[in-house]
Image (cartoon, rainbow, N blue to C red; front, side):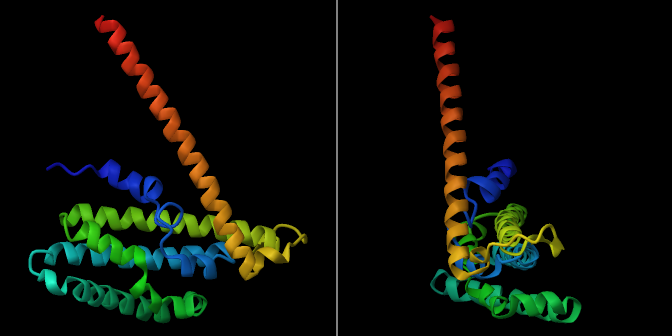
Length: 215
């Protein structure tokens, strides 16, 4: 069966965006989106674990007994999370400090376990790596955009660059994280719904024209 890489990419970034569509990984989303750079750090860490765990699980999918597949998946994910922690601690101590407790919590991030169970355990290595890459990109984009939004309004800056002195403290607070998340989900749903309706109307019109031509 031919792998539809375009669909995998579209699902990861848009139609099944893990943050804005499936609402997975909410803890880091709410806690770390005070700054855009935090979203990039967490997004890249999760993307690395997604790709590596997807690839290894795909390679071992016929060898792992179904009775212990979830514990096996968690063990594989935990191994790569440990590797990420060691690399960040050594190479990017600032990122390691910022992510803090949320780095080890990647082990129980619903996005990674969900992709392992629903995709990597049923598909080939290349497709699984692609799925991990684009799910990670979708997650990273969502966190970075939310972080930029909150940083601009809450701190008057973006990526640490001061834009103005006007600040709305609400967006730097916990309540601001919930409000921002809800706002982004609402906007994403509205845009997705509008695009879907437009596609259905276009398809319906084309079908109508084809029927007319046949008559």
